[in-house]
Length: 345
Image 1 (tube, one colour):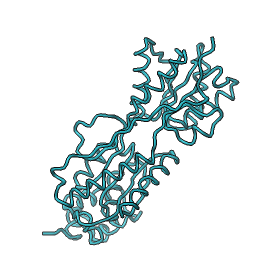
Image 2 (tube, rainbow, N blue to C red; image 1 turned 180 degrees about the vertical axis):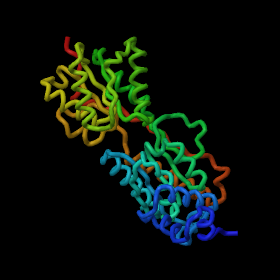
Image 3 (cartoon, helix red, strand yellow; image 1 turned 90 degrees about the vertical axis):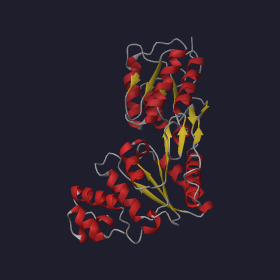
Image 4 (cartoon, helix red, strand yellow; image 1 turned 180 degrees about the horizontal axis):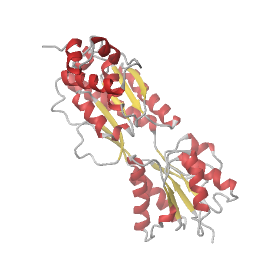
């Protein structure tokens, strides 16, 4: 028997009006009440009339993109890539920015799915790497595709787009080593992001592969921001033995490192080589332009959307249970520009 809004209210111990406010995402609902109502909705699999056709797995033709990323270039490229695929396949796109650190992030995403008549979700880091978010979506039986850093498909039960950051970071570091650099520093992105770990491990593997002992002083922990690049380069260049090359975890960090080097009178690339990652507009707007790893975000977004739509179609045709999960793989490739050159003797 289908659950009603009254059933939800009784299970959550609140009024029907409160349940309605939660469903409509009115800001007057307290966090603890939001959690109780959201859990009751999930437990009863309650489907408001305006969203029932989606949650019942019928014929909704809207995808959602949920993200938390301060990099505007990344977000715009993701949106454009998803939108291109949606238009081609006859789907609408609903974009939902959020704060992954919010204590109510799971309930927020759950209610967004309930209200928005979604056929499926595309989620990018860090949300795509948060077990609590993935568990909630699986409990709701929502189709979703994840963009994640890594290469291991083992245990993945939903479509993923894997970005081979480790291999690309190894290639960048080996490029610096091929230019005779041995004092190579690394400026890190946010902790808790798998891309940070993958890129750092690729850097460390390249050093080990070429017999270079990692110097802990050459690793600066930070965030994916221009500010981290500035602070990291200032720290590194003030060391008694400063590095001759810096590998930054993304182009925004690398642009900040380049800015700091210029302020300190260190010429790039003559005295210091700098490399970034992602091939964002930051890498082409600096002078010198940045050596980086090209990561075609809009293409990745299109492939993620295509995988999700194919999965939805397979489910609707009754083949979802037997069809093989369609994963996609991308390895960013090295782009050599003017910010790196051979170490002068």
